[in-house]
Amino acid sequence: MNIDSISNGLVIDHISAGQSMRLYELLGLDALDCSVAIIKNVSSRKMGKKDIIKIDADIPVDIDAIGYVDPDATVNVIRDGLLIEKRTIGLPETLTDVIKCKNPRCITSTEQEIRHVFRLTDRDAKIYRCVYCEAKAK
Amino acid sequence: MRSLINILDLSIEEIDALIATANDIIANPERYREACKYKKLATLFFEPSTRTRLSFEAAMLELGGSVLGFSEANSSSAAKGESVADTAKTVSCYADIIAMRHPKEGAPLIAAQNATIPVINAGDGSHNHPTQTLADLLTIRREKGRLCDLNIGFCGDLKFGRTVHSLIAAMSRYEGIQVTLISPEELKLPSYVKKDILRKKDIPYTQTTSLEHAMPSLDILYMTRVQRERFFNEEDYLRLKDSYILDPAKLRGAKSDLCIMHPLPRVNEISVAIDDDPRACYFKQVLNGKFIRMALILMLLEEAKR
Image (cartoon, rainbow over all chains, first blue to last red; front, side, top):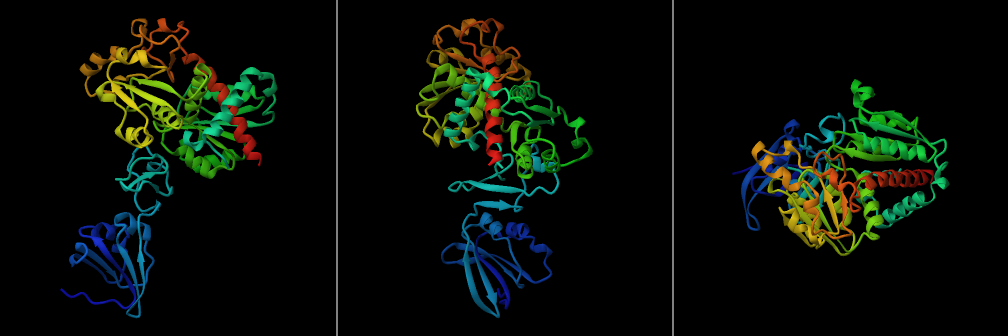
């Protein structure tokens, strides 16, 4: 299967197999006009299978959202067809407007324009809690 | 600007300082009669509360300050759709400190992020109620003379009781604490509280459904109400409700210096026959709540000056 290489843009690599669609939604990639390729279940020596997202435009992406979905993913920045930066991510300490609090008793459920902020409270179990109500992110 | 949203916002040293101030207020009330002269406390109560609001208001009045505010959302701009953030910014123009109760969890934090004066969380839904925990800590300290080396029994609704979760979190920072959890299966302490607090801090705890069995080993018994609406069916409620009503018979076998506490309001979970027992401390808790709120208002206003 051939997907064209990109000249200016981003390649999000080493995404755990099956997570690319979630990332696509969280990053709001559906709103982009440029070419976006989601490649699922690519053979990987390290991971067995992995997903890749290629974005054919030089756009800012929310690194925290990527780290939340898959801290082991990498972001490759491509300029003029060359790899100029390879970023590893890890679990972010806080998430701002990446996910929404689902607790109906939380103030974020009624007040407009409040940023939805989550803090990493348990790195090993990868648990994030809403800073307002402390409900666990789902 | 320093606010109090969660009991864990305060260090052990700060809690000690608040307790020391509260004890000094109790011993020398005349010294504090004008401590907050010309200062105003805004009590923003978006849901009704008797004890907490009156406690805050009495605290400020006893410090020589004055009080303004509202006691239900309908009599505030919230009824017109004003945001908590805007309310906090507006009230900052009128008052020196805010005590806020709100049915939504996290509302006082939003207020604190937007106010230019200190905000005290006076209860946000079933989430936090730090000044109740401070009242509990002052009561334990005054009754037992220490906050360490205690076996604390929590009885009743341990699943939804915010006062229980907060007090467990606060007490978990002291040495030699043991916790005894007494509740029906349906209302056991949530596993995340056990995992995040008790197990994380290696605090020994036991769980039982029998108040009588647990009683002899307790230094403190913290009672809470088992509410009908917490049960899936009426039969279970009727079967269990009397097991967690404290009466003189259940108190047999208790230590002579047991301290019986309750965040109130009480419905029937502590028999009025216990009220005259010297071990009953729940009305002392109410009084201590006023003194510790006085100490907290003083501390936050002092820090706001800096």
